[in-house]
Length: 326
Length: 168
Image (cartoon, rainbow over all chains, first blue to last red; front, side, top):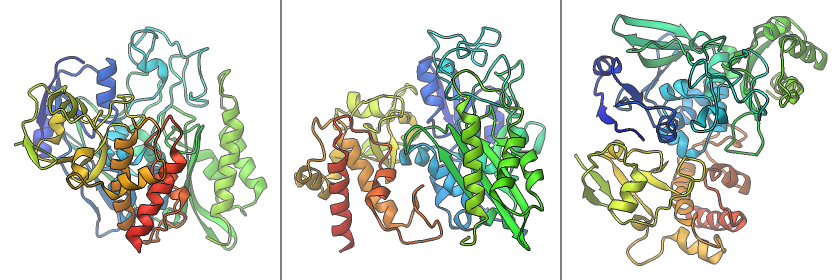
């Protein structure tokens, strides 16, 4: 690990001032590991875990979660469990209890892919780590890579479970920088790789994530997150689905769907949502919507199974959510 | 400021790169906490930070400044065994013993989480405030601690016994 200085930001203003020349440190579950591997080489760290970790509802029902809130605190919060169960379930599906106790909400948004080639500094070329150097994942071990939204330069997946639920929940990211405050929708916060896979988010140098905001909505209360992985727990997703819906007179009224594990960013399934709005929930309708969403999937040699897996996982979640016992 | 380790105040290291794990083992000679993968995948380095289970390999020691660290050495009451330590012995919850300090630190925090009503991924009803600690719940909640000897069934038996005694 390269030599590094460490300081704690005691206020948002101080964090913004320090962010220009340093890398922000949350729980360290990803950054410290990447520093040890030589993927990240900051010379200055600014610890932002002393900033707001509050979780509270506003008067208009929006839930505001401070960026320093620990993942475990969000998952266990009574308001999240009752109003946004898919968010609790998504966080609880991720990592281990130890990691969730450490990891912050802001850090979860900023975490890097777990592509093995990205982490292998000594042995692999990677366009995300070193733009223009090539990609050794192509033709390699592609099981965990993307089937949609990828580019020839990079097919690495976004590893977060939490962000998949936030994408489905219409969450916003509140950002503070030298020029003031701005808000970016979670679905626009992460970007697709195209020819610059090293540019992963809308956050600019010098900006700090202040909080996440989630609107209150009936579909969020009737929601779930299902994760399919290679072992029962403590593994990244092959495929995951976050969804919530409401029914009116036997038809789907509001619906939100997002996939994890299949794309370079949390994949909001707008086409499937549009196909299901106003429709009687049947196995045929779920299959048609999944087929439509994944029609443009372009799998690699090692991950074509994800197309069928994504469709079946979506159908299973929607069958459960539209059932009478909900 | 200082780091409180098992009740004793310790200066944080000057070099920010020192992990909490290395501080404990190499500078304080508290070698009960083990180095496993050193990348957050195995749980052998689990300690309690302000009472919560964390991975000391991915925690920079400077991040623990002003906070309270409890290791396996601080969990027992003097020379007397912690109830989890006694239960691990009774149920053969280990063979080589390398993962055991991390398992026991994690289990002690896990049992507190359960009494606080913290749900897990396998908890059927997230709104339920009372958690019934089944074997499935323990497996999920302890999935961050690997045992390569394969003593997981004994580990679950040991934890279940202590949980049952606590509830009684």
